[in-house]
Length: 145
Image 1: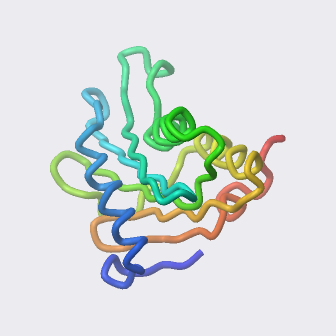
Image 2 (image 1 turned 135 degrees about the vertical axis):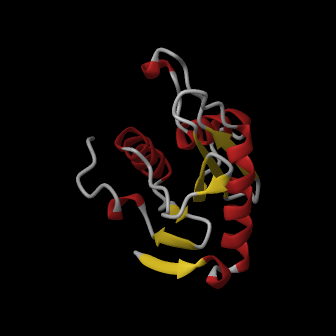
Image 3 (image 1 turned 135 degrees about the horizontal axis):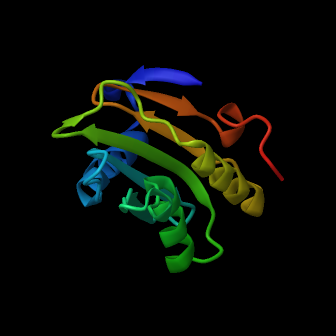
């Protein structure tokens, strides 16, 4: 994994992080107040955003990553995801530490990669830095299959 400051990101990655930051504003998090946004870049150049959606019955919510991946596959079936960026707000400010996918999302990302036999770069950002994984294997080395 590669750790960089936000200002050191490549232009394409910086734009994807910016879209993930915008997606945090779409979050519905009345219980945790932890607003997560995700932006996925498809191989056709489209960028799809997703945000976490909480529910009083916690298992009924959905994470930003799964929201974005499901939306992408519904809007552009068969089009591979090549990169994704994550951002989170705790209240009104972006988090101090890069946000990472939960275990459930890591498994979904792994199966998305497997489906298209193509790695997904994952850019996990905070307000000032980002950690970049070249593929989900760096975050989930022994994915269930």
